[in-house]
Image 1 (tube, rainbow, N blue to C red):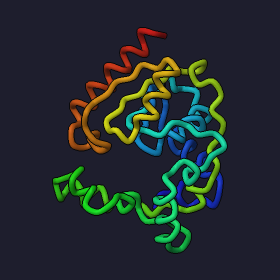
Image 2 (cartoon, rainbow, N blue to C red):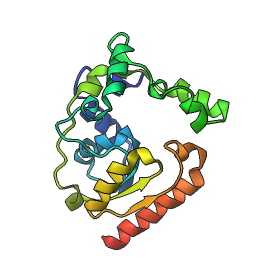
Image 3 (cartoon, one colour):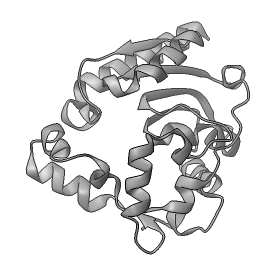
Image 4 (cartoon, helix red, strand yellow):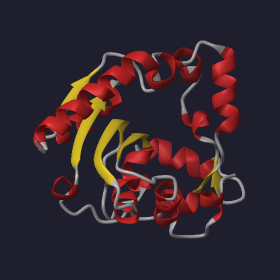
Length: 195
């Protein structure tokens, strides 16, 4: 379990400090999945981020916990399946053989599952920090890979962010990295041209 997951509270700040400690020059932050909610804390912790690209990611949800934003059935199942104050590792959150369909390569699937820690319920219950006017401090863009992120893409588009849609799935970042990298690069160029 990472050091950030061992904290009792202040998870957003702990994750942000861990990320900011790895940024030593001007950078574009690329976040995937649940990491999108961490962006406000990361921006506060690092003065070196000039743009953020959300990739099939949650958008910040100030004042709401992850449990507040999750489907009620999933939240109830995670609470029910928790052990020692932790929800199961996130690959186990997927229904049935969904992970097998997303990652048909058994080695890749096993590696992902082995590296995923249990998730503290306290983190999933912690309200997310404020998200004040991000576009003033840096540019933002959104890359959608799956229909599960339709709402986030619409919100990003409504905010005037550059957006792009790939017709794939949530883990295309692993199974089709060249295509995803090209789309991220395209969005980075669009953000730099708009700056």
